[in-house]
Length: 84
Image 1 (tube, rainbow, N blue to C red):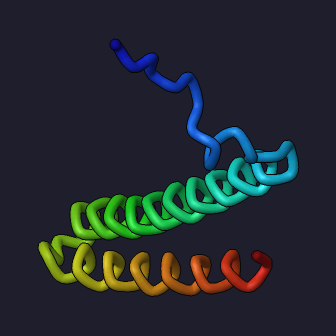
Image 2: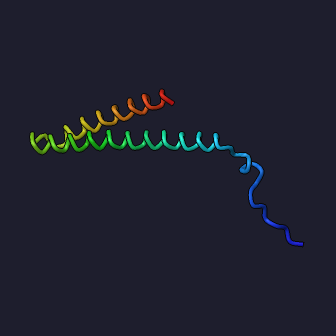
């Protein structure tokens, strides 16, 4: 006799609408954190590159503004996580 495959396991069939909303909310917070961190670092790097090209201080301002962008990213990550 062949065994029929189960369509849904019992564990997954008990997911409620509220659970789905909570999962969607958690995914949106994670996405928000990731995008915010990437933008903070990107702005720091671009600003450092721009100022280095204007002032002729190659690599120093890129390094400084990259580190500032990383610090801003971590601060914003903490701020977003506090809201959650």
